[in-house]
Amino acid sequence: MNKAGAIISGKCPRCHQGDIFKTSAFNLLAFYKMNPQCSECGLHYEREPGFFFGAMYISYAFSVAIFVAVGVALSFLGDFSLEIYLLAIIGVIALLLPFLFRYSRILFLYLFGGVDYEPAYKKKVSEVG
Ligand SMILES: [Zn+2]
Image (cartoon, rainbow, N blue to C red):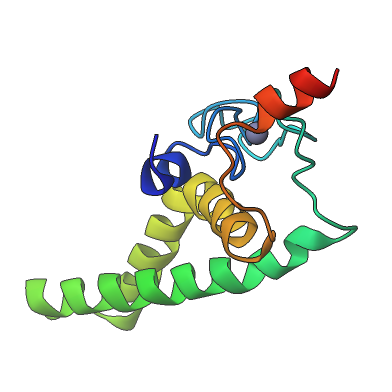
């Protein structure tokens, strides 16, 4: 699996095999639950205590992009009141919340986790014992 595919499907940045999150994004009661480490190569996803606080900046950037996209789309569709704009933007962000949460963490891990793709990592570990 290439890097883009691994990011989209939420796989480990080191081996592109293990899942970062425990459940599907559509499981509304548990979409935020992460595996502590990769089931395939053992990489600890939380690189240091509080590592994922930084993902809030990516989540913020996603929210601003959605805010602008929904605003522009509505402005082309018709002449709506401010309340309609706000409800539409809040509604779209609420609907996409599981994806915003997960992809902000996944991207932050890939960008700032300091982990390179090593497809043979598991093999190395098993050779050592
Ligand atoms: Zn892994």
